[in-house]
Length: 116
Image (tube, rainbow, N blue to C red; front, side, top):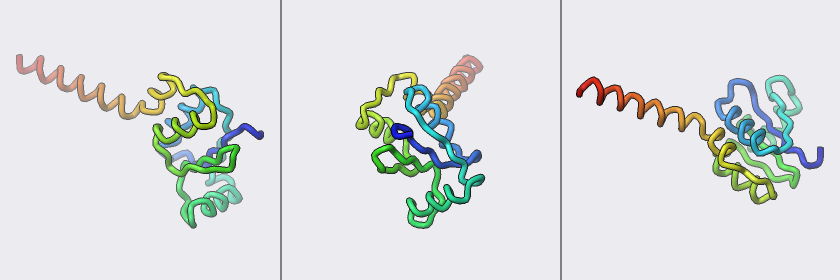
C-alpha cells in the first residue's frame, strides 16, 4: 500500500466523515484504522501527536502527517502530492457548513413569508 493514506480515527469523530468523503470523491487510496479497535494504532497516534489521541490523524505515503486537518488543509496537501480535488469533493468535505447555510436560508425565507 505504498500510495495509500492511513487515516487513524474512531467512529464518534465528527471530522471523519468529511475527510473520508473528500478522499473517496478524489479517488485517493486510503486505509481507515479505528484506534478504539487497534491498540497499536492508538499508540502510533499518541506518538505522532505528543501523547494525545487526536483524530483524525492522517499519515501520507511520504511519511508526513496531518492531525485534525480542515478540509482546506487536506485539499492543499492532496494537491501537493499530485491529486486532483474537484468541486464535488470539496463540497462533500464542507457538507456540514453547507447544510447550516442552506438551513439558515430556509429559515430566513420562512420568516420572510410569515411576515409578509
